[in-house]
Image (cartoon, rainbow, N blue to C red; front, top):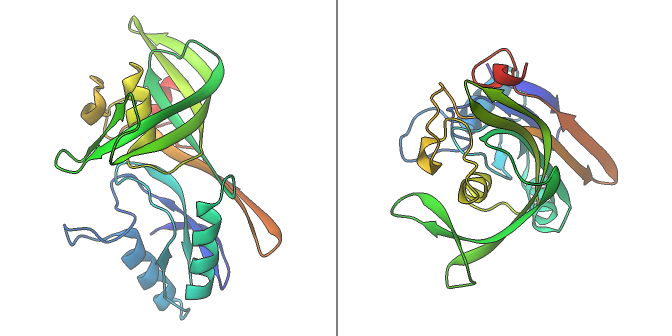
Length: 221
């Protein structure tokens, strides 16, 4: 059962579990759109679901879906506008940034063969500008290792952006082995914790923190 935080005739905001794709993929397994559509149909509602933005399979948290083509067009335009769609993530990283808060801006290149993004020094063919702001919520030392809990505001939605930008600075996300973490956990520590936007003149804001009783979030409970 998917947790739906809010729904109306135009859109819904729900919580994507980690490990579940946000849209159909090549595996043919269940995904968020099929599960949500089935839930709505069971309740006798319009079961159309339109993808607006995506979360990596291993990332959990808040996600928005449109429920008709008109709403999908409005949201797609909103997402493309600067600061029209506010997204925050909570992450645990190895180490700590030098500053309490700051900005990370890089060119990212997506290697489709490796299914991985890389920070590149200069603008080049295929590289896209990526920007995020971060703030340290707390830093701890556990078993002689330093970890930081970060609040991250994403300004661009590039492939694996947060994972690649943090890893390039020697701060891989906890348990994200693809980007250099040596820590082990059932899921890596990246969670979409806030969504905010204005739709048809009304401000909407949603919050959902990860479960700090579960590994590895319980490092900061």
